[in-house]
Image (cartoon, rainbow over all chains, first blue to last red; front, side, top):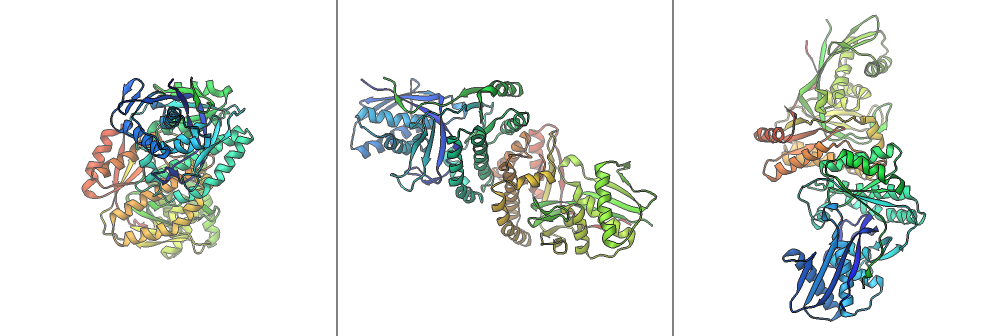
Length: 319
Length: 319
């Protein structure tokens, strides 16, 4: 029987924003993320006469199919297996939510690959191969909080579980602002960012911020987690702004949204923002404030969509 | 006969954004500016029965009058002179244009003070005392390009003329976007900015960027001037964004405007932005492109106002 693998997306609270090796997807910095319950990808792989990638019931051609199969080919070579494959995926990640579906997609793919060929791996080994598909996918092997230690080579660069079952009240509001700008890809953005005079200073700070975040997670300290996540996110976007040429993922609505987070905080509603390679913001908050924050954004933005997520589980078999 | 002094505003291409001594207004970094022909303050000082500050025909009370007279009191003490003063100023600086009128205002005040008491100063001495009123005022003593060397004490912190009569085609478009947000004062912003992890790295770069800008000015290299000015401005705003708490002078329209500058450049219309402690942008361009740039902004923004400025002269007597 074909096994279906489910992997959840994760959101980085300490960001990954720069490759040391683009082929092996080794990062320039370590990162830390929260796996989300609301967004996931289900994938199953079976033998086939020809390579075929079906996403949400539609056969994919072009770049997305190519990326899937070049990843699977790398894995086939690595494990000495062969054969054409049918990949069937269902993505429960609204692309517009500004959440990278590639993290759940490539984690699920790595899991489905192992299930198909009956390859037994430890979570760390699975994390390492998921990384080859998409860097952030290596963190989606685990639930709760996970840390991707940058390492120095293929063997040492993988994610580990920091806390698979966190007891802290931490809500993530994925705020989809109504923007329609074309987007600079993460890969292109990461490359451009390195021309910023603040890129090296940021790299030098990474270990310190990671350690502070690990302590904040262990202490279940919402305020410290929020402050560090917001600082780290602004650093990433400051690096983009100061790149040569300058670029930004911010749209006009992004500025309005981050000012609204400040304003809410000033009014005693504790919340923090983080932003990835897109115009949307994600708000870190606590259960008691979710309603107020949501109401504020719904009132102030046209056609805003907000999804309230919390901690999701690690990769799993559905059957 | 009472002499009227005219001083022009200046715009920093290498920014001043941090005080080493707030009383003496010693800066943490050197800066470089362009004096602008379109914006100026005319001021005359005469003896009076009581201190009185009239701006654009209206007697001022409160904070703005207080700032003027506490500055004049410092100068009176320094030069051993006394007496109540009538200060009459006309500001030809649309406040909404996002240009600090304090640079022309305090330069003109310093000049009018010396005229009233018949104190003969060299331009450098005048620059030094203007600095006590508003840091950027020390650069408005000169026309063209000037450099404020940060120095280490009152004596060594002053501006000098880099090129009083530049031959380069450099236009500054002051773009007044239609925003109505309350504003964080420069003084408050400068203080908050120092909490950014990028503030020290920025300071360390200042001397290098200043030297590159001086070379670009000497070489009359528009492209180099524009690139350096834009980089330096993004650094200032990146430092604000990464302060704790994070803040920004950007408004939604600011993001739209800076993306428009990138777009124009990609379409072969060479221009660069700089942004000070407010939401408006200033565009560095050349005569041949002023019309296209203006048209683009007028088309894309509602109620935008654009003033085309170029090099202004140094401080002068009008009579």
